[in-house]
Image 1 (tube, helix red, strand yellow):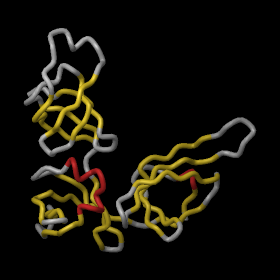
Image 2: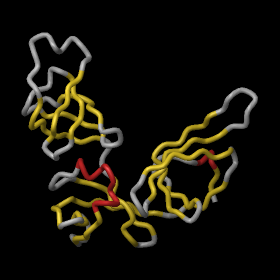
Image 3: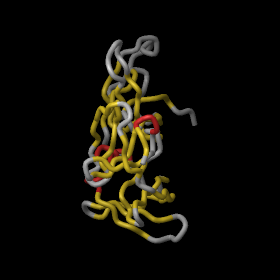
Image 4: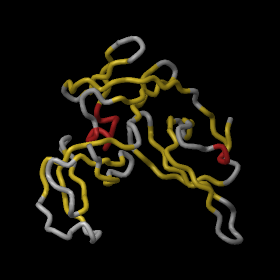
Length: 187
C-alpha cells in the first residue's frame, strides 16, 4: 500500500477497481483547509486521462509493472504493431487505448511497453518527439521577434500552433504530453 505522499509520475495504482498510471501529482493546501493531492492519471484500460483529488493520507494498492523497450513498426487497421527489442516478438496494440498519443507515432519510433501482470497494458511515448512541418502559411521577415502563432500540419497529420518564423520542411520538437511546440531542431 502507498499513500498520497508517495504518488509520483510513472507509479501505477488501483483506484475504484481501475488501473491508473500517475502522470503528474501535486500537493495542494489552502489556508485553514485540509491538504489535498491533485493527480493527473491515465486509465490503463481505456487510455483516457482523468484528474482526481485525494485527501492527504489516502491509501492505494500499488500495481507492480514492468517496462520494456519496443519499436513501433506499422499500422494494422485499428491496431499498431510494436516489436519487443529483447525478444523480437511483434505485438498488436489497439490505437484507441493510446488516445491522443496516436498522433505522434512514426515508424521505427522507440517507445516503452508497460506490462501489468505479464499483459501489455499501455504504451509510453518519449516526452517529446521531432516531427517535420508539411504545411503552414508562410511567415514574413521580422516575424521571429513576436510571439504570435499560426497553425501547422506535421508529417503525422497532427495540427498544432507554431511561431510565425517556422516554415514548411522545418523539423520541430513537440511535447507529447501537451501537443505543444517546444523548439526548432537544427540539423
